[in-house]
Structure formats: structure tokens, C-alpha cells
Amino acid sequence: MYLTYTVYVLILALFIWGGKFAGFKKDQFHEDSTSLDTMKSLRGFAAIGVILHHISQESAFQWAGGGFGKPGELNIFVNAGFLFVSIFFFCSGYGLIKSLETKPDYLNGFMKKRVLKTLVIPYYVSILIYGLARLASGEKLPAAQWVTNFLGLTMMNEYAWYPIIAAILYTAFYFIFKNIKNRKLCYVLMAAVILLLGMIFCVNGHFAWWAGPKNWWLNSASPVHQKWWTQQKLFWISGEWWINSCPALLIGMIFARFENNIREWFKKFYWEKLVLVLALTLATMMLSGFGQMKFGWWSEFSGHGPNIEKKIATYFFVIPYSMMFTIMLFTIMLKYKVSNPVSRFFGKLSLETYMMNLIPLTAFRFLIYKPDSQWGSMPDYKAGNYNLAIYFAAVFAATILLGLLYKFLCGLIQKKIN
Image (tube, rainbow, N blue to C red; front, top):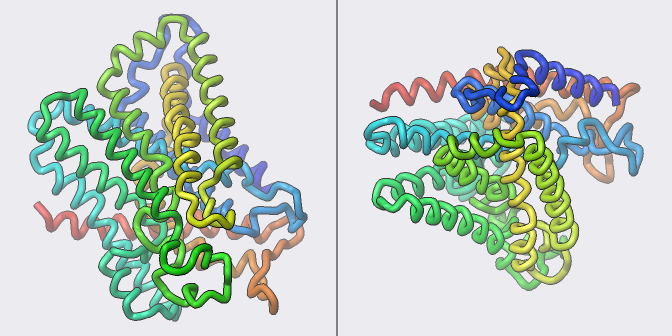
């Protein structure tokens, strides 16, 4: 667990470095806790957290030294990915409303600046990069899948779901706020869009469950398994990670709209309200865990068909946690905020590191797995797990380098669009 302890120490150091505590007195608060610099640093911490989450998903990190039942390296990050992504959505929602309120004619050219240039172009540049990488690796795919992957209709890069769902939400924001004057109705409609996306996943599930007889996916010999379009993580909105963080966008929008009132409310009996927020966050975390244990996102594998109703139940048990998590961060940042060169760097490169992370994760797997005649590959644990530490460092370094290259390539295209 030396790697885990090292990571914890480094993260603690990042939270201390550049941290500013407003003070214990009732009139001491950070009035700039949602400034551009602070929010960018918050996104930077979220970007680091997402990389840690992705690394912790590798089976070699799941169990300590291969010992069954023992928590693996970085275990705390295994189920935390959607919380980090919630930060991205919260910041985005906050930024949308603040820009709408402070910038004249903000919605003019919005689709070009905020959707096409910021999301669509990076999405297709990532498709090109991942397509070349997969071709170079000798990966064999059906011709139809190559076509749909390059068109962006199916996932060339399974991590590229974020710009898709963000583009959908931004587009909804544009048309709703552009054409409807009643702002209360606008927020209700945005909530409806977010809910609709959640229900689409609950129907879609994780793969084309409707492609064969009931529970065909439980039979490895089923011919349906041979069809390329029945794979997991292939189609849009096929996975809970697409939708379980989206409600935080609405929370960010509401906070931006009523920020002054919310700040003033928290300033009165702040410490008591902080305890209340922490308690509610803990309660929603427990509620989320209960819902996932009782019902579950992966209910297809219970043997009762797609189990759409169980996914719907899980959705409503989980989303309060992602929303309360962002409220908790806002509350804490009224008193304590952090900004340092590392958090700002990753804040500027958050989308880029997110989008490029899968290539290093895949390329360096030879460090943590060994061939196995029966299972294909098995986790490889060197003495002290030093190979896991090397993998960790290599993935982080390569992700940063690829992120910078990706940002440069996207910038070249974005500059061509005026």
C-alpha cells in the first residue's frame, strides 16, 4: 500500500499548498470562492481525481498483492469517478448562468463557440487520434464498426462520452434560454432534459439487450455475442457514467442564479449549517450505496431481463449524492479554498487529460499484467508493487504529454473557425 499512502500524502500536500482559510469568525468568508481562478483549480483537482479513478479501475489495482479480500492500491478512488465528473458539471452550470447574466448577447454565437469549438471539434479530433492508435496497434474491427466509430456514432474512445453529453446539455440550454423568457420554466425544462437523459440510459442499459432472446448475454455461447454492435460501451448513453453526474449541472446553474442569497444564508450560523451539509452528504452517500446494492446499475445480470425499473430506482437513489457532493464543496470553499500551479495547470488541461487518458492506460498495461494460458492475462505484483508505481507514474506523465499534444491539435482547427 506504499503507493496509496504516497498518493494520499501528495494530494494532502496539494490541498495545503496554496490553501487559504478565511478564519473562524462569523464575518470571515471568501467572497471570491467561485472566482474563475478558484473554479479552474477545482476543475484541476477533479481532473487529477478522474485519472486516479481510471487507474484504480485496473484489476491489478483491485487487490493488494493479489490477496483476495484485501483492498487494493488507490481503492478509495474506485467508485469516486462520478463525483469528480460532478465537479465538471457543477462548474459548467455555474459558468453558463454567470455568463448569461453578465455578458450581453452571450447566446449569440453560443453554438459555435461553446458547442462546436469547445466540444464537437475535440470529440472528432480524439476520434482521429484513437482511430490511428487502434489501427497502429493492429486491432481488427468489422468495417461497419470502423465507419460508425469514425463518424462518431459509436465510441472509438469510450472515455469520449463527456463531450457528447455536455454538447447535448449545452444545446438544450441554448434553445431553452434563447426562446423562453420565463426563467423559472427554463430551469424546470433543464431539469426535465437531465431526467430524460437518465431515463434513456435506464432503457438502453449497457448494451443492445433487445438484440436476442431474453438474457442472451448470460449465455457466452449465444450467437448474438458475435455481433459487433452488441458490445458494451459502444453506443451513446449506454452506461450509468453518462448520466449520474449530470444533475450537478443544474445545481451549478441554481447556485449561480441565487448565489448572493445562498451566500448570505450560509453566513448565518455557518458552522452549524456546514455540519448539516456534511451530514446530508453522508446520508446521500449511504443512500447511494444502498440503492446500488439493493437494485444496481448492472441489473441485466440478475437473470430477469433488462430490469429497467431497477435502473430507474438506482438512478433516484444515486443522483442526490452527486448533487450534495457539489453543495458540500461550495460550502467548504466559503471558508477554505485552494489554488496552486498544479491545480491551475490541470484545470486548464482537464478535458484534454480526460480524453487522452485511455491511451496510456492501455499502452502501459504490460507493466502490470502477465500472460496466462487460461485467462489471457493476470495481474502481476512485483515485490512492494513497484511495477504498479511505475505504471502509475507512466500513465500520469503520458496523459499530460498527450493532453498537451491534443490541445495543440484542437487549437489548430479551432483557430480556423471564426
